[in-house]
Length: 380
Image 1 (cartoon, rainbow, N blue to C red):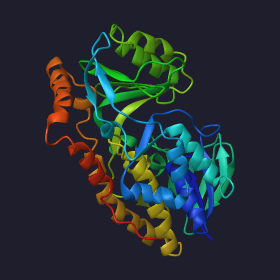
Image 2 (image 1 turned 90 degrees about the vertical axis):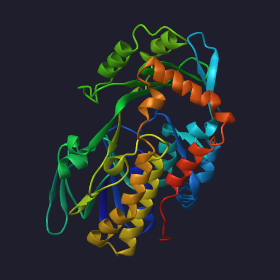
Image 3 (image 1 turned 90 degrees about the horizontal axis):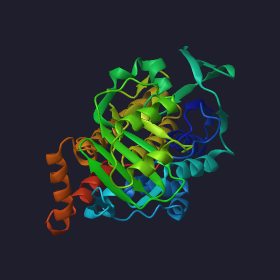
Image 4 (image 1 turned 30 degrees about the horizontal axis):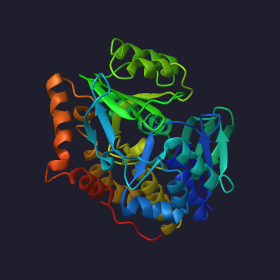
């Protein structure tokens, strides 16, 4: 029985753990955080590939029970008056759930069959003829047959195995910040050139256009200060109130909106899934890619009777065209979420205002569904 280490306990890691243990593998998950991470934005799934995997995992009904509700989102002016709106299919798929709720569901589905090592991380990886020698920051040295990086955009496993992140990260030209609100603010989106403040459910979500920023992605206070500086002087709608609540939020998230583009998702006995190998960013595709990729990788390892070379190559073959189709959905998002000029902002608002009366009003949902279904999945 193969002994497999997964780095990352957000979505991709537990999804992979579920399928690997389902196929009879022994699985350990290591996670830097002290527990399952809460917070984050709403995540959506769409189409039979996403929903089919979730149904096979037995958690689709639970996800539906935790749905955020979605619905149309008003685009407002500085005084809070609606000037246009976003159709619900733009902002949510067939089902939508907050990232923290989904992470908890994934953990609950795997905790009894998987060894979880929280508050720990991989320090070194050294491949041998028969396995991977792993040094953990707090857990000493252990040997695994395979190591899988499911540790997000800033993947530690990818860095240790493939090299510096800059080789693979493709920035889309803007940043996002997300945090929970302590006091309710009406759902809406308000933009000034290059900056957007919005509320979806009980989450404040900010976007702003920018060249790459040099910051510590683990220094939350530094990230709050960056956001405060960017939105300083933006006094319209509810922005001052949202910024006040930003300083108090316990679950602040900040990062570039970026994709990971790689020629291969594996090297030797190490492979990458989810955002670590093929982050898609916008369009509701990233989490769908994670759960589909986990299903495929575990299934191919089972089909190949643990032969990692065959299984990793098949995972690449199946996922690469699917990844590219989904990543295309995220390109150009800056002009939608943080239009750089007053002219672009007016054009965006006019487009959404006119959308219900145009023959191509269903185009966006069809494009998203086409990308989400651009893969054929075996019944492993």
